Image 1 (cartoon, helix red, strand yellow):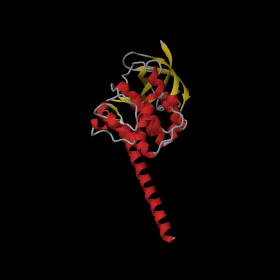
Image 2: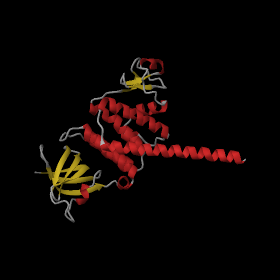
Image 3: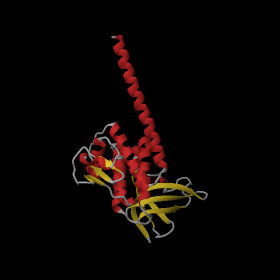
Length: 270
C-alpha cells in the first residue's frame, strides 16, 4: 500500500550502476532508506527530490525493515539560500547529521522532524547559522542520554549570575560555588547566559539575537566540550565546520592587526 508523507532528504548515495539510495527524515515514519531505480538516467521524475536538505511531499511504499520505495514526489521547499551559500551548507549539513545520529531509523519523532525543518527554514531566511546550530546541539542532548542543568546552580539551586559551567558536575555553578570545580569552563558570562537562554526557548521564540564573535566562539568551546565528554560522536561535517571557523578566526585576527597598524601609522604621521 502506498503512503503519502512529507520528508526532508538527508543524503543520497550511488547504488549499483544507475540506481541510488536516498535517506529521508519523514514526518510520519522517522528516518527511512529508500531505493530508487534508474534515478541517474536523464529526466528521471524524482531527480529534483534527491537533493540533500530539501523538503518534499512523497508517495511511496513503506517497509518496516530493509529498503522502502518512492513512487512520486512534489517539492515543497528547496531552501535555495542554504544551497548556494557555503557557510549555510556547512552548518545545515552538520545539523542534519547530528539529528540523524540522535535517533534510530524507523522510529517516528515528529518533534525532531519539526526541529530540523524549522532550523533549515530559519537559516534559509537569514537567521545566524551559529545560533541555530547551538540551539539544536543543546536541545538534542537529552536524545543522546545527557540531561544537564542550565538554569540553576548544581550546589544551591540559585539562578544568580554571572554563572559558569561545570563538566564535572554536569551543570551550572553560581558565583558563590565556583570553587566546587577548579576545572570549570571559565566561560565568558555572556556565553553562559546565552546557553541557558537557548535551553529554555523554543525555536520560534529566538527572534533577533545579536551576539559578538567572541560569544559565539565561547559557545562553540562549551558545546564542543560537552559533546566530547558526554556524547562522543565525531561527524565528518563537524571537521569542515571547525576548519571554516578557524579560517574565520584567523581572518578576524588579521583585520584587528591591520586596523591597529593603520591607527599606529596615522598617529605617527600626525
